[in-house]
Amino acid sequence: MYLEILSYTQNKAQRLQDLENIFFSNAQASIENEPERKSLFNKYAKPYIEHWPDDVFFACDLNTNKTMGYLIGCRDSLKAEPILSPLLGSYDLFADQFEKFPAHLHMNTHPEFHSQGVGTFLVQEYIIELKKSGCKGVHIVTAPGLRNVAFYTKNKFTHTINRDYKTHKLLFMGRSL
Ligand SMILES: CC(C)(COP(=O)(O)OP(=O)(O)OC[C@H]1O[C@@H](n2cnc3c(N)ncnc32)[C@H](O)[C@@H]1OP(=O)(O)O)[C@@H](O)C(=O)NCCC(=O)NCCS
Image (cartoon, rainbow, N blue to C red):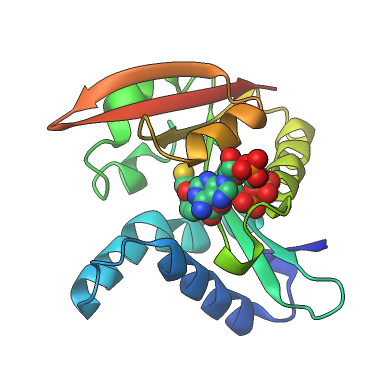
């Protein structure tokens, strides 16, 4: 397995197409119509690709060059507020934690490669980059009870906070660096 970063890849168009395919291969099956799909992608992926291409990572298969998974991130969640908050209603719910855990990420691995260490590889590589730039902490926001909670716990996102957002519950998971 090896890592490619969007800013430096020779294969930009192909990798971005793979990112979109992996994004939807894990999204809820109920998303059928095109506008709804577009809106989901425009919220959770597009701004990161446009604004922070150095933080778009691809895990690729050494032998086949296939994209196994991706991670997209933002190193300064507070600074990104004007971009992300209008897109995502819940963005500010954990804003009081952004100083301690400034970076955040979203990631997906291809279903064919789940539970083979691809996700852990991506998180570890991103954390190396974050530490190099002096970042003090990283967080994700998920929902209690989801399967990915075990994944992030295993990857030491152990500072957890539960809060209500509208009708559902959200879970903040932070890791100090
Ligand atoms: C969560 C996810 C990124 C982990 O990547 P991965 O390559 O499977 O991770 P690793 O192989 O390093 O770690 C495996 C652990 O991830 C978790 N996991 C595995 N498949 C999963 C899935 N379909 N959904 C959520 N978590 C999963 C389990 O805790 C697993 O541990 P186990 O193998 O002991 O059961 C990946 O499974 C995925 O893309 N899931 C669906 C989308 C998602 O939940 N993304 C995160 C949004 S915040």
